[in-house]
Image 1 (cartoon, rainbow, N blue to C red):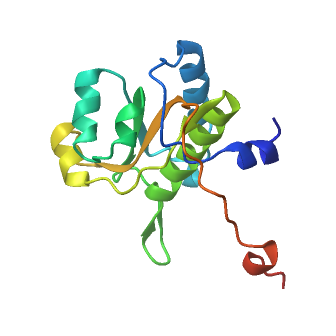
Image 2: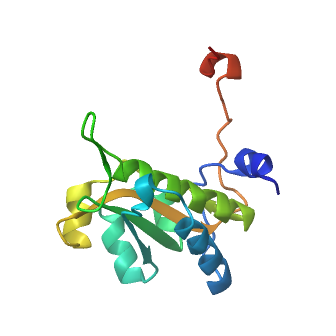
Length: 170
C-alpha cells in the first residue's frame, strides 16, 4: 500500500483475535517506530512491549474496557521529561509530540502488516505508574493495543472534515 492507502485503511480496531503477532511483524513495526522523527533528534522515548498475561493485567487496571482486554499485546509509550526538547520562546516541551509521531508510525506500520491498533489516551496515568513503575523522568503518553483484527470488529463510520475546512493558503 502507498501512504494514502495506509491512512485510509487505518482505523481504531476495538476487537482482536487471540492470534499472536509474529516476531517478524513486531520487529518490523518497532523498527518503523525507531525511525520516527523527533524535535532536535532527541528521541525522548521508550516503548514497553507488554505480552505476558501478568503484565497485561497490570496495564488493564489503568484502562478498563472489555474490548481492550481482547488485544494480545500492548505497547506503552513513554516520554523522557529530562531528554525532551523544550522550545525556548514559550518553554513548550515537545516530548508528547515526539512520542505521538512515533505512535502514528506504529499504527501505520501495523496497518501495512494487516494488524490493528487503537490509540488509548484515556488511561489513568497514576494507576499505570503504580502497576508499571518507571524512573520519575518517564511519563506515559499512550497505550497502543496491537493485534489481529477480529472478523466482527466494529468499524465506526469515518468522518473527516473537508480540506477546505482545515487548510488555509495565504
